[in-house]
Image 1 (cartoon, rainbow, N blue to C red):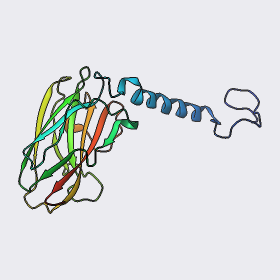
Image 2 (image 1 turned 135 degrees about the horizontal axis):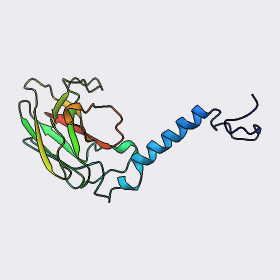
Image 3 (image 1 turned 90 degrees about the vertical axis):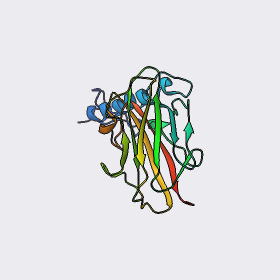
Image 4 (image 1 turned 90 degrees about the horizontal axis):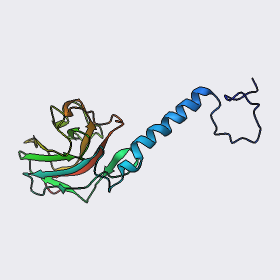
Length: 193
């Protein structure tokens, strides 16, 4: 009592947000370490060797996505929402072929999720619409496909594309925080949107 985690007497003028126990210090250091690993210079846009989706393109829709050679987004948690920049416009019953490529060094599995019921949750397994069953080699192109449900009503749906280091796409979850990988969200529009 009366001593901080370093064994020195507490000083009244210390900032109040300092860790007050060894456990708090370890938690803060661990979170900083994770942040540095997931947002350091190796994740900058111009770096082409780390854990990210370098290319995501589609074929088979009325309006396809062509997000090639995008590199890592460099944003916190390697998450980016492309909104209106890249939009997939579909018709019910269409088969959408998705081609993905990771960076040059680390192999990544890929998975695609669509919030078909618009409840703001990607329900697994029903809304995991496509995934690699293995972990493709780094920088290789791989194609996975999904079919837009024949009775899907018109509207705008959130589509999530994820990669995770050394993880088969069938094991990737839509909201798990992976230490190495990237998440890209897009809009998928059926009909007039």
